[in-house]
Length: 200
Image 1: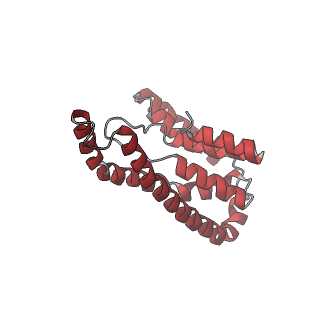
Image 2: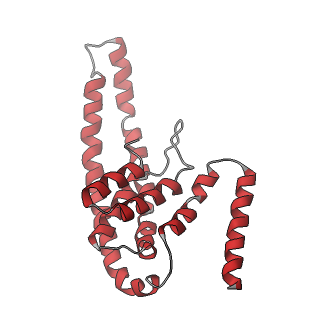
Image 3: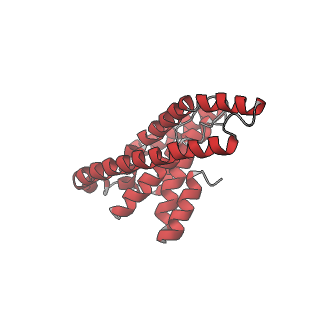
């Protein structure tokens, strides 16, 4: 459970004291990729990197309006794919470790055991993740610094709340049901919402 966006949002809120924004951001990412989970060789988008990056940038610029925060969250979505690709490369790199493990299982004294293999894997992956995340966070911060003065006046006038963003992100939750009537209800609800906005 600690690797979920909601857990990150909870601890971030506990440290910063801003639970409203922290849980608002983390619940968005929790819902948007709820349909994607690791099964077999499938590597889903990594949800922690965009969540943590969004929380850091939103905190840095003191963003409280959900419509403005949405800009940062959407801009950070590619990080999920980037870190999933890093994990894919790491798995390919660690194929040799699997071979060493098979040798160790037959001849324990001739090869590295599970403890050493795990430690070596962490020593490779941890620094790589830290460097890539730091670079990504720097780019996201620079992007936000450039875009915020231009779009903030426009986005600030949009009467959007956190539940609005959660409804948009809940498309992922509905897709995870694998139930066609749920899709029909979702589309019907979206249609009614749009119709009511057009009428008013």
